[in-house]
Image (cartoon, rainbow, N blue to C red; front, side, top):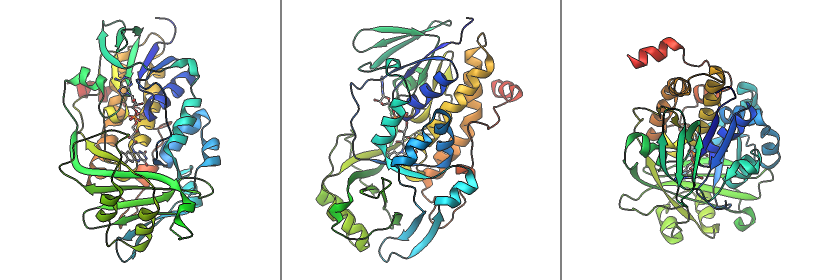
Amino acid sequence: MTSKPKIAIIGAGMGGLTAAATLLRAGFDAEIFEQASRFTRLGAGIQMSPNAIKVLRTFGLEEPMRQIAFRPPGQFSREWDTGELLLDVPFGDSVEQRYGAPYLLMHRGDLHALLTQAVPQEHIHRSKELVGLDDSGSSVRMTFADGTTAEADAVIGADGVHSTVRTWLLGEEKPTYTGRVAYRTTFPARLLNGVEIDDCTKWWGPDRHIVIYFTTRNRDEVYFVTSVPEPDWTEESWSMKGDLGELRRAFNGFHPQVRAVLEACPEVHKWAINVREPLPRWCEGRVVLVGDACHPMTPYMAQGAATSMEDAMVLTRCLLDIGPDGDIGEAFKRYERTRKKRTSKIQFHSHENKWLHRNANTDWVYGYDATTVPLASSSELSNSAA
Ligand SMILES: Cc1cc2nc3c(=O)[nH]c(=O)nc-3n(C[C@H](O)[C@H](O)[C@H](O)COP(=O)(O)OP(=O)(O)OC[C@H]3O[C@@H](n4cnc5c(N)ncnc54)[C@H](O)[C@@H]3O)c2cc1C
């Protein structure tokens, strides 16, 4: 192989689109295969911390994000009923000065649309559900549910928490349901009928919480996401509607601000919170995983998408480093060695759900720069093989 390898990416989500953008920018031939036929703007917000934005700015997304996203002055941590202020985490200028990038809140659909625009449309193949993989040692053959096939020099599984690529690597094993659900939705702020709410607050109850923030620069859209115990719930789908009465009852007794938001919201979706223990490995031969496929986490630190973007950048750097005729499998192992300790630590702390409760040590998360972080050395690689 004398030209840069042809890389297939399974999944056009947060990690897959970022991987395509960074690989294409680095001169690789990258193609995405996505099972969905189209993308819809379903009600969900997303927090993009400085560590994510340092990746997204490399392919020009920072300015368009700033144009539409809300840049909150900070995040409050509050007691669920009295509203007592437990912590005031400064974002705004202060986070930019400290970490060299902003903290932005936005609609997930708007971020997804920007990521999609960052990849030339002819590189995104929709209605391509991966059902089979065959790594011959010199290339990988993919089979899709529509009966078509495609071939690439390597495959990146960016296919989320229920990853088919993960199953191919490690065998069938369902993620673990935490027994908790996230209700979430976005709605026009005018539905609050003049009730004033904080810019961005996490309300901490004894066994549940709710995070509420604006998702647009001009504060005209509100978002909330909860974590509520529902141990017996088994359904899981993006389009699963939640019961508003059930949701409001779950937050009975919470502060009037919370209740006003829940009263105002016209509909809500419900999402099972799933996790996995850190996986034994992320790659095999010419196949590798990124994002939720290899390190799904609870959403409590708002780092799932951010870490998938970090993965994409580090993986691209590892592939660039081996040169056109290098060993792709070695590049994938190096990527795993560079990333796993960090993502395992974030998985652990996210699950613990103490992040930004009463303590604001954010440096180790927001200070990470995937564009410059040292890649694992070859001695670390041989140690891991021993
Ligand atoms: C309630 C909630 C709130 C969150 N809030 C935040 C936040 O504020 N900040 C943050 O950083 N993270 C947040 N996250 C986490 C974040 O959403 C995920 O970690 C992130 O989407 C993972 O990106 P990914 O690319 O790995 O997977 P996804 O974005 O899930 O993308 C996977 C893609 O693969 C496709 N796919 C799946 N199987 C196949 C197949 N067989 N063939 C082809 N395509 C396939 C899917 O259709 C999908 O498009 C939150 C998560 C939840 C549940």
